[in-house]
Length: 201
Image 1 (cartoon, one colour):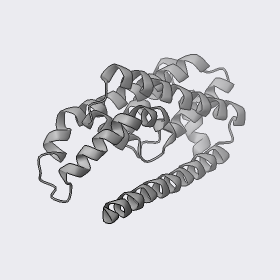
Image 2 (cartoon, one colour):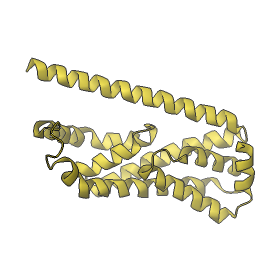
Image 3 (cartoon, rainbow, N blue to C red):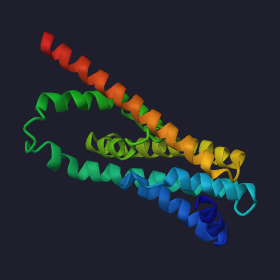
Image 4 (cartoon, rainbow, N blue to C red):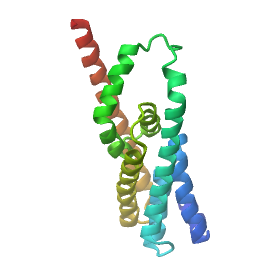
């Protein structure tokens, strides 16, 4: 099945392949289950066969991801207050929001830099960087840098492994699962420390 997908993509016009890289990079921020990482790796196998070029692939996939990130950023910036700060969610207290604001102001840009390396949380981080109103220009630069680094790694992976797509699929699935577990452990630990300190106070 995967070999058939590669064979089909290889028959497409290079411009359409590049457009697909941009589209999947963009859509994953709005629809996280999108298989954008796998699509970029598949594109890298075409780089290995000289069907398309390395630089346009990386730049277009990264640009698409950056545009998608900023889209979610502005959604969070415009709708965050009306959705989260309006008091509809009684379990979200003002003190907690104020602390989250300070936390995001301190670590927000670092989160943007590692955003692409955190599977399952990319759309959430982009939304909350907008919700906490981080600087737009700085956010754009950091988001593009994160995406560029990640797509370079994916392209090198696909180029190195070549057409062994089953191995690529296993690697990406394993990374995604491990990443989700690590993210869950970090979030759970941070919440435990927070509520423990709150209880002591």
